[in-house]
Length: 293
Image 1 (cartoon, rainbow, N blue to C red):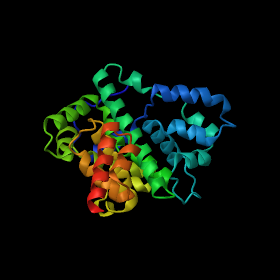
Image 2 (cartoon, rainbow, N blue to C red):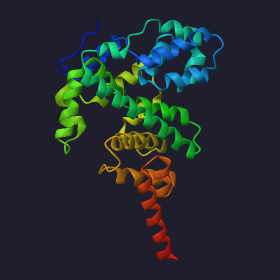
Image 3 (cartoon, helix red, strand yellow):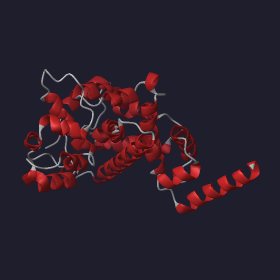
């Protein structure tokens, strides 16, 4: 039975130590999909397997945990994508590493509110990953897979809190909703005993996750294009999850349009905003063109 944490640890270090010891659960749907492909493990296309793994940030974490634990001394280069990780360890070894994994839905069976909160964060992470990849391709960036995975794993520690400290995660979400003017890091400090980014920095290095993830947490790197690509995708996914009229969205749009050199209407269409918003943006742009001509 999984031990749930109901009280904050005194700082980031105890959380890091705790998360180093846990076995990470995966979604039931992920387990079912992987089981269906197991018989073809020796011949399966790694891209097909990678697409299943990339749909579940927890399964992605398990893959990198395994690779880091079995890293050879001769491997000097960082592996930064799921597909390359599978090629490095081999699909059969991957399957051997996930026999009878803990299932997330079973682990949170007594915490329906936490399960719902967790699924929302995972859905948000998937959306951020899709947008980050799309924008990287738009920018003709060859690191599009790494950028997509960085967006998928950006909220990994929040996801782990939902899995292993569900009551604390619920409390943090409720506090963020009731105190919108406060910084999330302050509330995290009060609820968990440390900001989640502080916990993430050490875990990312320990698990051998892509270096871009570390860059996301360093203010000095905040203006690099790849980091902005990821952060803007994460922000847009977070804000749009509240509805397409969230007050933070206009600032997100302006920043993304500057990054991609794209018009407002084209961006809205690309991210799947409501048709009436796309049409309103087109009409406003047409009016501006008439005034300037």
